[in-house]
Length: 127
Image (tube, rainbow, N blue to C red):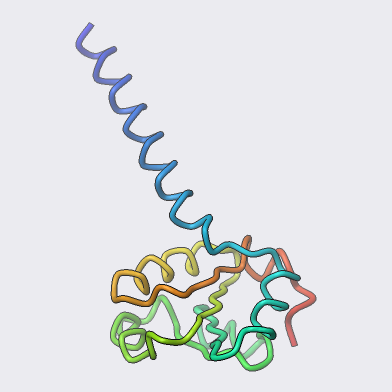
């Protein structure tokens, strides 16, 4: 009986964690067309590609700043960003960008949009 209750408790905890993570991301998620349109029409905005330099060099959205999420200095680099600007963040699939958004919010950057599904969901945006 204890094992069943423990299993149920763990399942509920995982559902709550999953829901809160999804909810925290959902407020700034935009589809490809909405993402680029909002970026182009938002004054004081910065486009940030959080993929590796190799991925960035292969192709990226025009005008994007590359800050590699996988680099050990990522947090140091994002801490240098102007907190008053609006950031549009993307990666390949949305995994690294969602983690980047969490870290950016942690240091006080609150105006952030994330490309839903990453660049693989909107390859037409690449140059």
